[in-house]
Length: 409
Image (cartoon, rainbow, N blue to C red; front, side):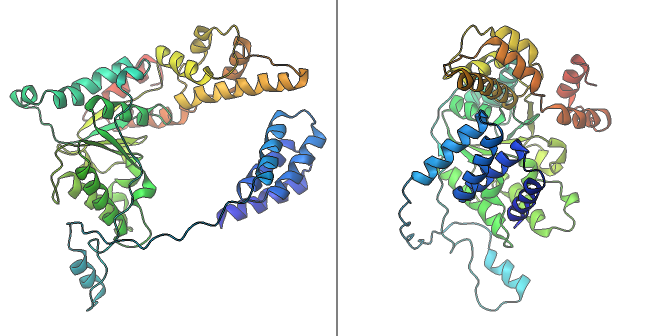
């Protein structure tokens, strides 16, 4: 397995550099995750022998010893036999018989057990809970939420209520959080779908998974059906010449969004992607993901709100957030969380050396902000090329304006 090969390589590297404490702690963490706490404990102890006050080693040591002291969990009870559930849809029996030449019926989507849906959440957060990002909120209101709340007005102006909304931008900038807020604004349940929920190694199973997901969303309407990393599910079919399975998955997505097998009333389809330019053009035509909203790194008010959120349960003293906000322009939400974690590690190390609590200060956060580099740089490098060479129809004008304003173009 790839994980075992990686671990073997790392163990070899540790043998070659036995005094490399960060490497040894990384290996100890991997061993602990793989259920090998005794070996992890040995490496952790060796690291502490080289650096007795290492904060990361002390925290890892505490976690490993707690794991070893915990009683073994009872064996799991046998799972009940799945009950078949019928789901109307494409006639997979005929298609697979024609493909394989089989004369006996093969199991179909109608015979397969319905998956247990655990990721459907009731309406929760609203857009008011999203700090800053006023332009994104206004764009959402105009392009999606307003027409949904005022169907008669939308109809009078010829505004279609069908189709989906695509959120795009750098990774870690809150696209999923915004999608949850959209569900809250509509008073709809939130159904999050990832790649692993759809893609399957067996021929035809990915399409069946999509059919079941849409059927469940229709049953739970009103529901926001959110596809994360849509570029992985809806890749350009021209790039899939040697992958008929993935082409069929894209075709099934098109079919479901066109509501061939059911009525999509009350199902609001949202997608998120870091690379909208890799999505098949058929998924972007009217009636599908025909509206796009650019979600950029958080602006100053949003950065202040994110920093405040990640510091809320940590001991702080004399923190001037305005100074940290100015240092973190173009940082993603994930980057800001990393800044807070890095600053907390510095304060924790000082507290353990002195034997008393040292609260987080502005100095800790400033040092962390200078140490952490924004992760959005590679994304903007790709975005510059897209704007320069692939924006002939103006669909990335919002992105182009941002790049010019920030001198990234």
